[in-house]
Image 1 (cartoon, rainbow, N blue to C red):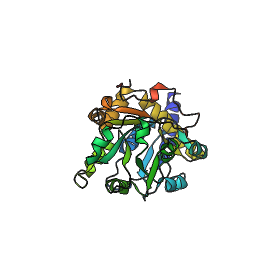
Image 2 (image 1 turned 45 degrees about the vertical axis):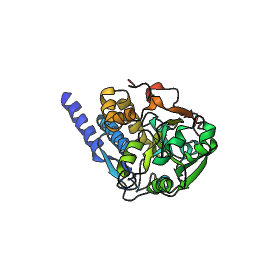
Image 3 (image 1 turned 30 degrees about the vertical axis):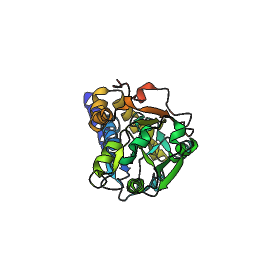
Image 4 (image 1 turned 135 degrees about the vertical axis):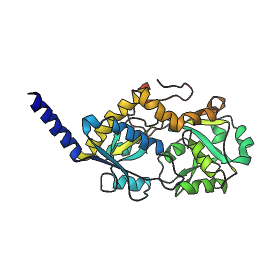
Length: 293
């Protein structure tokens, strides 16, 4: 009986490893685009935690750069099997989200990139009405364009991510909203070429803005999503796994932004679905009250 059980286990292991599960993800828009480095590292860690249950996996980049709208068109086809996008009612109907906020909601905490000489002007802003008199820059495909517009802001849209920084310096809009987990790297990468670019020092904006992994709403997409769901929960529920990864990418950044010293302005996000896990505190991180475990 022991021999039969061992043989069965070997057969099962061979079956699991015969066809590794393929996760093909979108590549950065440029060499300076590191917005998703943490997310893909998180995906790799989640997949590693599920090898015993699901077998081998293959994690590889797509062969070409795609805008977000193009990614959704390609999702589930030969070019792309997984993508990252914010929570959105319509996309969650058309595609299959794993409703776990990948950065525990921190991308919804926003600081502003501005032209350095305008800091005194921003320091005099004490309420949302004053801030609404200024224009915000966003990418044309970005889902939170509608969040800003719905909250009464004029949004100037750019056709590509890198070009938005130059648009800001050229005066095409007044500020560029960036998350607290993105902005430090973005500024550091451009400091030499764009010395007039600066992180505004007095304002913090928050709106609930979870980013999810999305898959095609197919049988194959469901299998890929199920594995990621299991793996992410293993990582999120184990500080030994989650904390080193999170701190490697984000830990020092939060301390450097002096969040406690800023005016906090809250925006509404009317585009979240009823399934958004806002009531599960284990999935969210309050940057004013770390650590999360």
